[in-house]
Length: 98
Image (tube, rainbow, N blue to C red):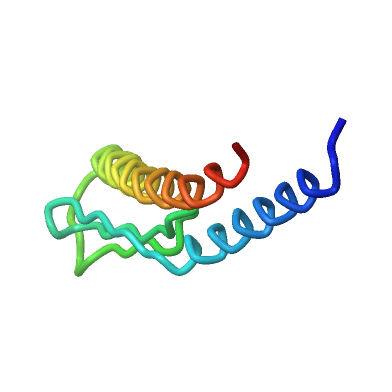
């Protein structure tokens, strides 16, 4: 099935994937909505902070809408960074597998 060389390459791939995940934890992306709310996430798509800037005078439903919008946008940005980093990592691993 798998020879020793293939198993070694799979272990190297797993190690590179883990290193990429650690690196993604250090990459931050932000989204700000109208200067009222700022969301920060890492490139592993984990929300790290939600900041409400200044004193906000708005209805609960409006604040919830802003939060949903900002969270969705920051997760999309984080996903784009994540996908690009993982594709870059895979590019370096896959040629050795062929």
